[in-house]
Amino acid sequence: MTHGSDPRSAIGVEPRPTVAAVSRHCSRTGCAERATVTLTYQYGQAQVWLDDLSGERDPHAYDLCARHASRLTVPQGWLLRDRRRALGEPSDLIAV
Image 1 (cartoon, rainbow, N blue to C red):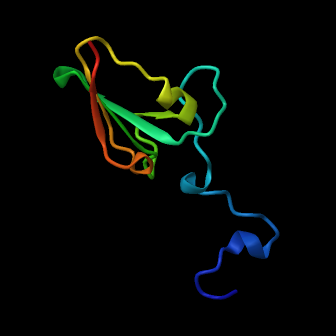
Image 2 (image 1 turned 90 degrees about the horizontal axis):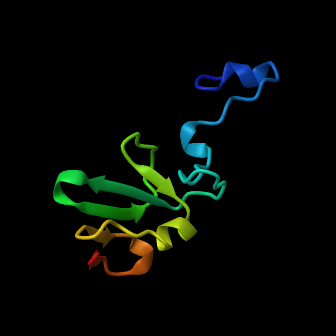
């Protein structure tokens, strides 16, 4: 066995995938789509942020599929900041 190799592969057992290698699914109940967006919010500031999917799952954030991210509405008076790079320039939308 060489230095740095996984001893499980030498006995025919495949190593388990890392968390980063497993695709994440949308946090919306009943949705099995692949997540592409991370939603975070600050209740005290009445702000919601949409970002490209974060590198790791955060227990204080929500992973959303593209469909649910595009249909997202925020409470009246809240600010929605869409900071996804795929959309170009970030935008600020205020729910009225």
